[in-house]
Image 1: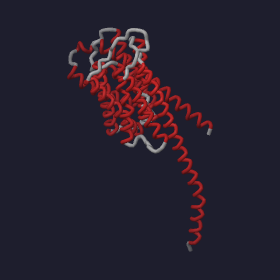
Image 2: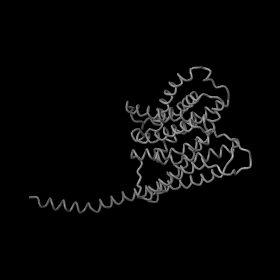
Image 3: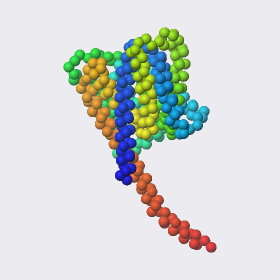
Image 4: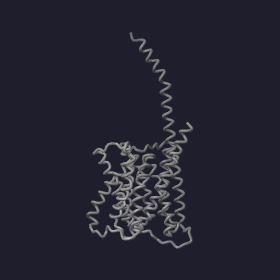
Length: 355
């Protein structure tokens, strides 16, 4: 029993650390993407290069590491991969860049904190996430998710007095179009996480699944680029800074992030992964203050406290849910074992009465 408990704790700890690293990668991508757009990189060319690099990075590992465990490819699975690419790559990345063009990185990151609530609703409606509203674990998950979203909302809407003694550059450029595009981005992201969970159960080779998703996403972006960016000059990389932003987007934000997020969804479920998204708002705010010279405000501290409380609540709720599930299984097993001798005795008596 003790050994099993250690294994469970270590797996849970590993999942939490990977999710935190994932949010750090996301936070860096917000800053890098804003810099790329400021340099004039095309909103279509940028994701094409990003997905080419990610595909070249992941495909060899998928081929070598998943030879034995890779299920056969069927037309139905290809259709699933194509749809995953449509919502998780093309719509997700496209709407994000359009939204970021009209908004600041901090605003874009804060908008993404609606993803846990959207994912929670989608997963609950499709019965991928079990929620018992009358049990303490269900209440903890609901309140925790609400606290996370509420904390990010406070960061976005309530500024409060400044906490640092330097002049900040106001980069908030939110507009109606920025909100619309970023909300479409959030809907696409939540839908991708929810839809990916059942696909992973049918096709557990995570690297291969990621490679096919990137491949179909790249094809879809190339078709869009053929109409929107036909000029060759728009595809040229003219500086080292542009190359660095593209490399970060391809290697870190697409290659590493897609695989890590797929692994986390497989281990913890879509809602558990989505609830960590508000952490990136804190990281983006800190990076913007340190790198870009943005100001920190009291609203950010209050929002951070709400997010931390919400994360703890969700983690506790998931832990209690697993304990209750294990307890119910043990009770069913005990009942079955206790009933077995009686059933056998009754069966024996019945057989003895047969002439």
